[in-house]
Image (cartoon, rainbow, N blue to C red; front, side, top):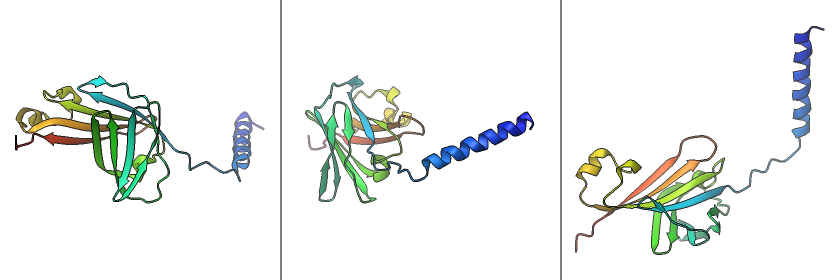
Length: 168
């Protein structure tokens, strides 16, 4: 046999052996992903270890996630609906809508960065367009959520503009 034939036979044999070893074994598809959470106010990270809450809401259903240090362990959700999430830390409460089950149970672990940017806004955070930074006079606070995959892919960003109360 030539060297090329020998190498080819070896590769095919190893592939068949590996395939036969995996047949019949269950793959754990129900494992929960872990979200590593951080929280920033005006660019400064807060120490949130075990002192924050994370709630998932859909109409009248409310699900509290388990917190461990900086991590969120989300309980299993059955429906493929859009949810709202509420992050609370001390006097801060941030909520974001239209969070899908796929975002709550992605194929990999993520970091979830919650934050607040008060006026004067930090333009380097890129939470608004340069035109908005220049012309917006009514927004007093920007609340944001950045979801970053830890292995591959693009992240997501949600931004809430909190407007000055006109009655004052």
